[in-house]
Length: 162
Image (cartoon, rainbow, N blue to C red):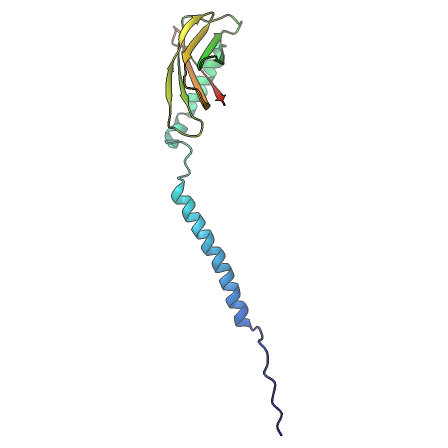
């Protein structure tokens, strides 16, 4: 009688390791390519709509900040009852400033939609007030103050209402 020779079990050979290695990293690379292509298609990467022009104008912005510091003005922005905002403007010595033209823009912090211009009216004692209704949620208020001698001062504040 002849004995049957046992069949050898499955053994991992070099080509099996190579195929597993290539498949593993192939899946990783394919998923990375998918995520990168989705990210590039959905977000342009620009934080400003005109970054080149903004960069060129940066020196003008720095010069404007130096002129503002030389003026010595201070603007205090406050929310008042009834969805109005007011700006109180003082000089370096703390004296109120009258006869200024105050304009402002309300805009949402996370989007460019919903931008609203504001026109401030003087109410006395260096205070200028504007109606901002409705003022719900978060808003960024940027105020531009112009003096009689073409002096320009800018201030900003985030307003948050529940």
